[in-house]
Each structure stands twice: as C-alpha cells, then as structure tokens.
Image (cartoon, rainbow, N blue to C red; front, side, top):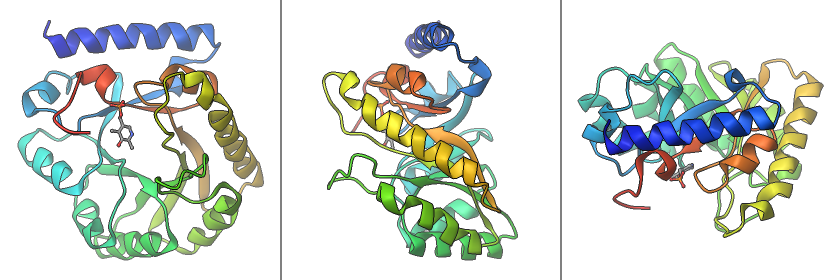
Length: 233
Ligand SMILES: *Cc1c(COP(=O)(O)O)cnc(C)c1O
C-alpha cells in the first residue's frame, strides 16, 4: 500500500470508531477528500475508494486542470468562488456541489450559468458561524432570510449548510460553533421551505473532524488527514 492509501485506511478506521461511539451511522457521513495542492499521482491512488463521496478543491483553475487529467470523478467546490469563474464549474457535469455560496449576487450568477447549461446546480449556504472577520459566509442571524431569498432561483438548489472554522490548538474550543451550526440547520429544516432541502451539514476538517462528527456533521472535508502535507495552504 502506498503512503496515501495507508493514511487513508488509518483515518477511515479512526472515523468509523468515532462514528460508532457517537451512535451515528456511517452512511450518514460523507468524506470529501480535499485534494488541493496534491499531485495527480496521489489522487489517483484514492479514486477507486468507495468511501470517498467526492474530491474537493478550493480553486476553480485547479479543479479544471485536475478534471482534465483524471478520469471522471465527482468534484466539489469548497473555496470562495468569484462570479466570473462560475461558468467553468457549471460547464463541468461532474462538479456536483458548491459548498461556498456566500452571497445573493453569487447565487444569481450560478443560477444564470446553470440555466445556460440546462442544468441544476446544488449548493450549500456558507455560514460564518464564528463571525470571523477573515472568513467569508453569511452571518448566522441572516442565514434563514438568505436561504429563503435564493429559492427564487430555479436552477439553483440549496442542499444544506457549510462552515469553515478557525484553526485552533484544541478543537474542543470549536464545539459550541459546530453545535450552533447544527441548531441552525435543524431550525431551517423544520421550516420546510419549498425548494430547500436541508440534507447536508458540511463541517469538520483534518484538525477538528472528530468533534464535528459528534455535533452532527454529514460531510467532512479532509485534506491533510488523508493526503499529508500539501504544496500550499
Ligand atoms: C483546505 C480546506 C479544507 C481541508 O483542510 P485540511 O486541514 O487539510 O483538512 C477543508 N475545507 C476548506 C474550505 C479548505 O479550503
């Protein structure tokens, strides 16, 4: 087994144990392998792993380059998205989810471009739950209105929420934020808004995924825990 495969096997084992001890089901938690800054050779070692739901990238150019070099994978955009780059993603049939919807203007552009491709684009609303000045995302108190507002777009479908939390030494410090995300998620779900499906809660990265599992994440975005260190951060 290659180093990447070994690391992946190890993280899967840890993850399964945590899911079990939390009393959750493994089917309810999707692994997004964050391949930014990783080589094609390393990514190829994991493309046959059934437990990986999709590969995640935070730059449009990098998704496009890798998509050309790799067999048909499912890709997720997880980083901040500029409106002028939306067209490259809507043109990729295998770009199945954008985690980083953070403004009305971006929603409008995604809808427009998806319409031109005669497709539907699934998105998650990115919430700045920690109100971090250095992070993108909708403010938590504005999220419900935002989600309602973007239902006006026919070719864009909200499938859940996403958040990126600051890096801290002790991931326990992040537990209240994960809990607040889950609360907001359940609140919106209970509202049963037409056109909104609260299915996915994308939170938890290499440093804090264990806490995220306990607090109700359905999608984990794991980069370094799977691939090891990367070319950039
Ligand atoms: C890079 C990145 C990740 C993965 O981070 P790791 O610490 O390597 O697990 C997850 N989500 C987003 C939005 C990222 O940009």
